[in-house]
Image (cartoon, rainbow, N blue to C red; front, side, top):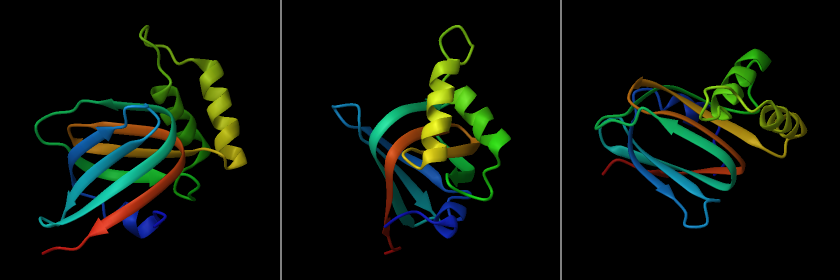
Amino acid sequence: MIPDEESLASLHDAELIGIDIGADGRTLSLRFKKDGEAFCTFLFENVWHLRITGVMLQNVVSRAFLTPSERFKPDFVRTQLDWLCTLDDGRPNHSMVETATAAIDAGTLRLFYADASIGAEIAVLSSDVAIESEPSQ
């Protein structure tokens, strides 16, 4: 299933409980526990770039965004891309940012961003994103 605004909003207060990066470096899955019992997994294919920082023993999402979205304003996208494409020297790779911006505008890449209440901040740039949900048992 393709994530929609409702599935993104449901990540508020969800806990990140799993990160799986494919051996090829092109796939990523992020598993979240929601509402105490329900689970969902975001599956990313053809990952172009990712950044996950601040991982702790508990990682709780404040809000999540996925382009294209009316909630994702151009300045916000640029800020997240600058962060995502930051090099070891603390400065963004402007060439990467411009390439990513053009690909997002063309619809060939999507930017997923999860802001943390506590713990991990996540940004993923990939061509394909899907969500799998598991109901509470």
